[in-house]
Image 1 (tube, one colour):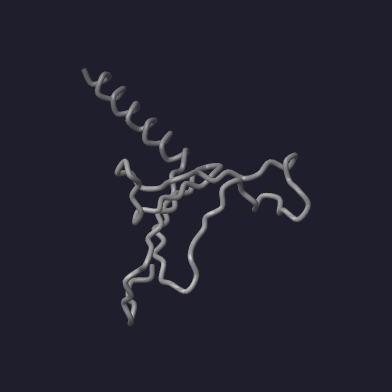
Image 2 (cartoon, helix red, strand yellow):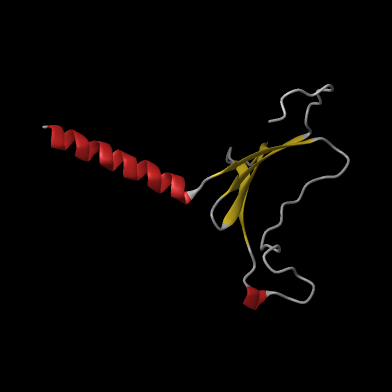
Amino acid sequence: MYVVEKEVLSPTLTIKVVGHQWYWSYEYSDFITESGESIDFDSYMIPDSDLELGQFRLLDVDNRLVIPVDCHIRLIVTGKHLALIKLKIFYSNLAICWKLLKL
């Protein structure tokens, strides 16, 4: 993990990126809409059947992330993995069953 930076720069833009099992979610947290919510959207891979000439299989998406050039951007990247959620549910149910057996 990279911890120390010699020159600390304040970012012009912060983008939160969440990797899901089959798609990405993006949130421009620095920009707030009139309703008080941040701008966010999901980005899915384009299916093979919908690819056009010049598009890359497994790389092109329906909503691309647009970022400005010549400025400092902070990316906060995380992931939500379905297997971890299922594992947590499994262990929760196991703990409940264990408590019931002890009764």
